[in-house]
Length: 288
Image (cartoon, helix red, strand yellow):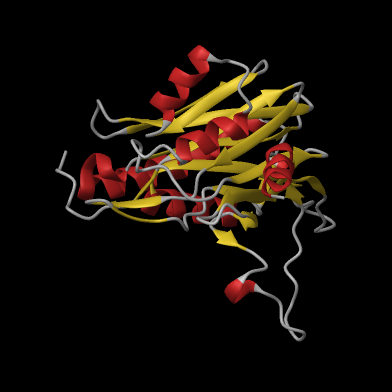
């Protein structure tokens, strides 16, 4: 394998967890370029539409749409690889057909995604070696099992050419991790398995010993078997001890500065989760 060039791009931490049947995807927003360079604008959590049709009837020319759901993806690793894989499957997964012999399941969808993943990873890693590797989670509604299922995609770079692997995870309640912050996250979980998942992620984002993880929390979850990206309400305390409440959509703080709405602007409408509401309320009370 070739040695990584001086300037490469990495996305660094994502986690998925299952609690009481509800499945959540979350990550930080940092993209690192090596040599202590970074920008907190990476998009790591995606909602991808999947449409699966019956085969076209030879006599009527008609077909029916038998699967119409949004699946979730969350990446860590090479940004270049991640975005190329995402763009490839984004288009293809909206134009699927099945026959009586098709594995009409999330495993079947994952098998197809793995082909694009392996093809893209091989081409990129031929040029930049292990720096081209991206790993990710993929989850969605499985029509065969009639439940949500999550798969973890990784690259085996011990063989040549490299091979893409995928395996089902979160068969029961639990958490799965990918990225450079995973080691620290596992240490925390070994000490406190019940730590709030958003608190776990925020603590690693704020940990200066892990500079490859940073920026805003980004998040998505399944609602009615569709993956929905949510904004995240967060906060910081400024140098004057005042609480600054932020409404973050991935790497962007909405409703402020460039994104403050003028009277003739479109309004960006997202649902927000409030994982730190208790902390925010306490901090506001303390400043009064």
